[in-house]
Picture (tube, one colour):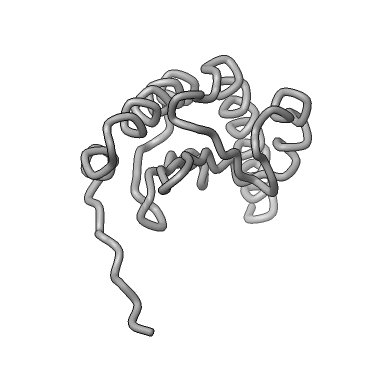
Length: 131
């Protein structure tokens, strides 16, 4: 079977312009929330999806055929927020949600700030071992 190449996105705006309106609106709101929670994070495209980078990968998000995903990339963060995530399809380091039922900004903010702390702790550990 021949593999269909994915579109290469230049930036998050390019990615968002390529998805349907309902999903775009949900992900634009998610993006704004992440930017407020992590003002020092840089926007990027990684694995052909929107990403935020702060002392390493912070969080990612994407739209799919039947859902949107918020990629936390940390099982410990998923465990920490498991009670708040129980109403979502969440596993590993990923939270699935519907565009018409987006993740609450307060929850996203708490998750992003917890990820920042993880990345800061990890980068401090690397600096100490590299000294």
